[in-house]
Length: 262
Image (cartoon, rainbow, N blue to C red; front, side, top):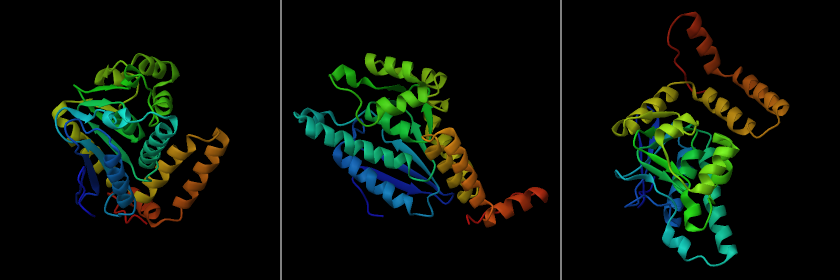
């Protein structure tokens, strides 16, 4: 994988890939950062060594503090604004639909585009001092990278409207209370906890992991009857895998399964 200016990638022997956004001082999501991030996701999608993806931010101040304000200030027509929003949406949507589990390691400020990116991850670990929010309204704009849609789906319409229309940030503890993050841990432990969670998932049979994730992510947008049929088909496909046979045999023999991811 080619070295990038703003994205650092490390894949360990356990199958955990850590993608670090490194764009000082606040890891703003400029067009160049988004382009490199998108390219990194394309590389990880097809890399069998990368089983679970952790997204982190460099530095101590912010996970990601938002989109690049300097770029937005240059926009003066609706067509350019539309194109920027759609580009951000499509790249962040790629993260959600990568086909591999993703975890946001939110050690500090997670605002605007940063929260929009974090919400596209399948799980979120927050540091106890982190602040989360969609403050775009304070700048005379609104979330444009998916925030109005994902936030309402995660925390409910009324809470999303409150957060977006006030532009107020919330604490990590409040984010946990409303279901926006999975866990709150000491700030210094965020990346470790995220990687530990990733390793637990990476040890499972990856065919089953991908099928279960697909059922949840894609089935969520379907009517219930259609989603149940989709789930049944994916379950049926797993019944033909070597991992299913190994998993059941290991259970009967009271030992740990040795999955081959096939």
